[in-house]
Length: 237
Image (cartoon, rainbow, N blue to C red):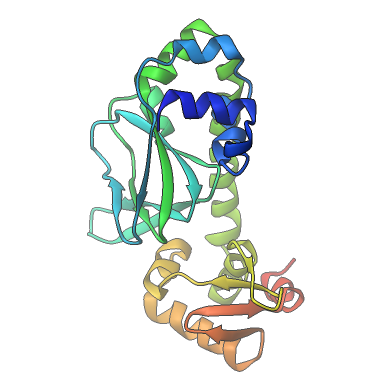
C-alpha cells in the first residue's frame, strides 16, 4: 500500500471511505505532518486460511494490522503440543513485540482468509521518536493484549470443559446470516482444544453435546446459531 493511499484514507476521501486504515488505531491520532515521517512503504496483502504469517523466533521486522479475517497466535510447548494464546480480530495489531525486541514471540496463522497491512518497525520507531501521538495508541494496544491474556486465563482456562466451550462460543466473532440471525463459524476441534487446554476429543464431545441439547444449531457445515442465554447459564455467568 502506497503512502498516498494511507493519507487519502486518513483524510476520509470518498474512494477510501470503506478502508479500515482510516480508523486504524495505531495511526488514529496522527496529523497531516506526521505522515511526512513515513518513508518506507506500508504494504497491503491478502493470504488464505492456513497461511503462516510469521513463526515464533523469526526476526521481527514489521507489525501487522488485521483488516479482515481471524488469526491465531500459537505457542509450541516442549512436548510438541501447542496452545493458542490469543485470537486476533479485525483492527488488532500483530507483532507488537517487534517494538521492543528482535524476534516474534508466537507463530501467527490465518484461520480464515485475511487482509493485512504490513508496517515496517522502522516506521513505528521513527514515529515514536518524532511525534508523541503514536505513543498513546501503542500503550492502548499493549494494554489490550494484557486484558485479553487475563480474560483467557480466567475464562477459557478454568472450570469444566463444557463451561470453557460455552465461554468460547460467547466470545467468538459472529456475523449476520442470510436471514439476519447472527451465526458463528467454529474453529477446528483441534484448535478449540488448543485454546481451552482440553483434548481434541473432549472439544468434539462438548460441541456434539451442545448440538444434541439444542444450545447450538448447525446452519451449514461448522456454522452455528448460538442460544446465548443457554450458553451464559453453562458458562456460569
